[in-house]
Length: 406
Image (cartoon, rainbow, N blue to C red):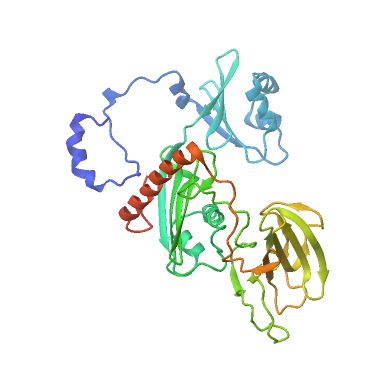
């Protein structure tokens, strides 16, 4: 609390303060309380030691000037101190000595949240695990796409993991390699973690919207950790729209296109995805491998049967990574992109068949995965409305992508 004598002064400079930035406050000495026992650790003389490759704890103690008896006693205090025997290069030890040169305290940070503290009271050691509290705030970001989704999301302050997660969330409805257009836009509500008042990492995406070619898709996280649209229908479909990480497409689904090698009119019953050679190719859905072979036209190819109705085909692979009869799950890598067979350059040729008929994988209706129902659906729809209303409100408040709400 700011003393009353300083409140007037503080009020004059309040307009200069920025939210989220710490500022020092002078406090009269008379208002300070005496140091507690633990606060006296500030009076210790500290030595920092970083474990090097091949260095044992015994060597570390010896380098600090401590003998084996102290090490043996400290290590055998309890289960926490036993873990000090498994230190790795780069781990930090902080030794606190009193004025007489006696070891009083040892600190070993386990991670940015936990620190092992070992204290000596003059006769025995004791340990405790100091745990810092993570604060979770809600953050918001949005953007309109000008050139690419990745560029827009990056400029909007999203991390690489968040960008890929958004692409995965909407990847059952939008082919990010083909369908993205200038003018498309997205909005994201996500968790931001803070430690000691500073942002440390991002948490879960709570809700998101993506408007693609005029159609808006929504995704909201449920208590079960899965994502559904605003009506409780599962975001996950039985098939991915694209079996490859989004890059760009060289040719579209066109039943009367000229073959790139022969120059003759030949149905191009699928989509060609151009990406770096070796790019992983994913199974579009759960199924069983019908064929995994090679011929001079298809090169290395894989066919997958999904129930009695659907078949997907993956052609011109550099390498096949599944065998005939093998069961695969959606997202499993079935091969890598290449240029084998009759092709003009490296790409993936992808086909989607329904009851033996070729369909455009970009627009074909895909079967839905399990969705919510009953009371669970009713509860979720209320929650989803709140989250999406929140996004709409924040979208009106935020005037540019540099403003993050905490």
